[in-house]
Length: 114
Image (cartoon, rainbow, N blue to C red; front, side, top):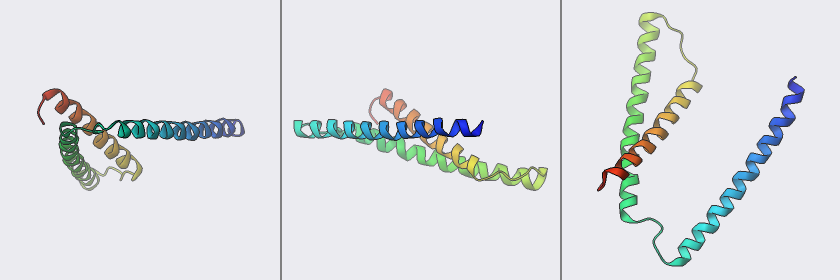
């Protein structure tokens, strides 16, 4: 069964690498075309909005990491829970930081002046 799955996964990975390369080339072409048009790529409001969302997302991520460390410590010391491998907290932290940035960016975009 394993011998059958790996060729399919290898083809899927190759297709994904090719797709990412094509999208990168397409995005580069679009950016060069926009740059030649003479208009700014991002206006001041968009830059302020992204910076403010990133600033708050960074603090949300840091507080999430601190809370996670505290819960893990308390669970291990007082309740005898087993320690968790490093992979799951890293995935959870990545998801929290990315989703909080996207949510804050959408919120500040709808709110108006950042």
